[in-house]
Length: 112
Length: 110
Image (cartoon, rainbow over all chains, first blue to last red; front, side):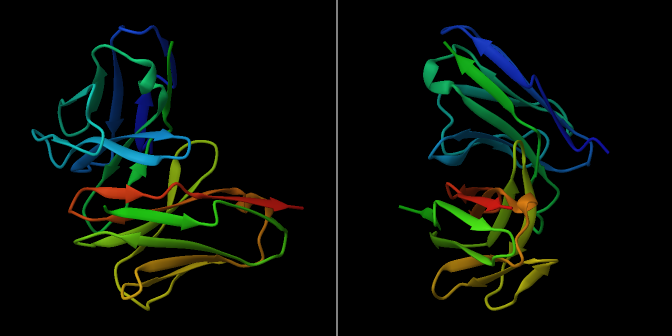
């Protein structure tokens, strides 16, 4: 039972480079989310997808784009990475509003 | 502005002690409050609370919500070193969005 799988686990980018963080879940959950976690700031929602084919902005969407490729996969793209995007990124999914999230193991991204 | 505040920020206790972690919130359209435990990696789900006064319990952990006073507590009795972690509180304010607190870091010393 894999749950939520994120790749890569670690990444170092130079300022201005682009990359895509991948997330897949095998629990048939409808909703998927991307969070970033910074010291002293807690987890902040970047984007979410309530269902396949829909995406919405969260609290801190600037500098990011997302794609809900199908029910299983939800990717996060940084088009032009900035040092302020250095963070730990978590993907999560949720079956229904009566349940909590299941989180992936995180991607530690450093932008230099 | 909506927010979730956890206290204390950090706590160091000895094995066997009982601890109480606090989470207060100011969120419009409250739907639920969740507690998570985060060790080295991903947060793991502990409890979801939607109704006031009903205690949720799992082993040595328990939690309760007060929707009138806008807070929740997480109790851990007979603490063990394996309880060392960051405990996160999150409040749902729409069908799909949560505000997370910054967490309480608990260290349990043998």
